[in-house]
Image (cartoon, rainbow, N blue to C red):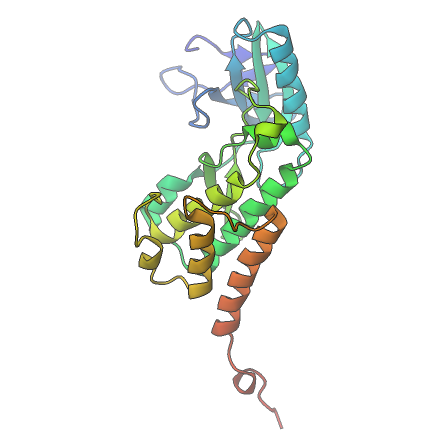
Length: 265
């Protein structure tokens, strides 16, 4: 793509060596920084195939899922601005996500406090719940591709950037395990709190989270053990359990009533 200066009606941003400015996002996509002359704004151009590798039905599947994803209104997802095909290549365009991969963030900053880790896990669970009506997107999402973004208010948030749009649909609805997102979010929470990946079957890992309160460790054991049979019965129940853990920490850190409400008389 080094010779491209324009794609569809978008301009391709180029480095000093005139190569396109590429963005690391999803392994199945070629992603370039672009400029939309119509809105005079920077965008991300995601090229998902050369067209010929997708059959007619697979092309239709891509367009249907991409336009479904464009309906998502949440800062947890990259907002899709356009979907199309140009010179036989399927693509979609998003707003620019100014962040870094979560793994890079944790490597630079180290593990987070339990309150922040739980807040991020709750936010991520909210995002997956938002996907439930869009079952085809839920089946394709990969929680391993997350960007850590620091907002203008200095708040850390996570953005899901891989909804599987560049991959073919291969699973039927009755083959999808709704428990899997809970396990993946718990494994991600362990990583955020501990700074290292969770290794199934290796004892003592959760106990090593010294800053995590006991009720949070209990929830992690419940959801991360290999033969987990007592998982929360829904993502909503799982989110409620995470919120209870967060509330318990906040309550323990709150000053006593006597110290907080002092008489001014």
